[in-house]
Image 1 (tube, rainbow, N blue to C red):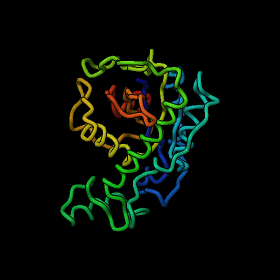
Image 2: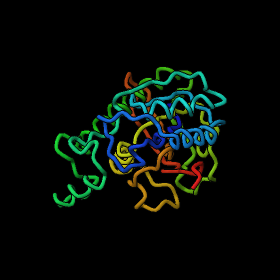
Image 3: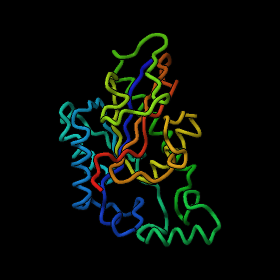
Length: 255
């Protein structure tokens, strides 16, 4: 068994975010000045949190955010950033470059809830889930290969973070966890990932979390954290257990 922490962070704000435009995959925007400030605030918040692995979408806004977070970290400032295209934002097809309100109107005209609506030439939620599964499989394999010395025989249990509210500290849930992966990605992708974790993987919700918040879009540089346990008895590590510590945390963002 191998237990590790997983912290997922949304990229900082871009000008398109500020202007209410859909970026998706076709618009590869850099961070805005506010996005850089948000990323700096996230890096300050996480500076004493140890990461052993970093994975990031290959899009500019995510890579820039990850670089800022890692550069200021006290324990992993020289760590390799693994760029993975399976972490790209959801494709919104013909709606990309248009205003978010326009896609909302398209969904309304189709009589579908916005998260489930797929614009022409866009990705369905199920297609994004396939990419999420592909990423998790590759991440599990890489972590198992790189941290073989942390694999233990028999049961490896992490504290059940669902039985109490987290203390609100940057290292909630991962203080004594030796392996910890940082993933930097995108809002719509993360929302679907949360749906996959809570519904498909049956991850229990942390105490005090409003169920309606599970699938809301994470704010720019907002954070989600999970505790993962892998079964490593075979060549391909398999998920044994998943627990949620918190979702959509934004304590570092000034309002």
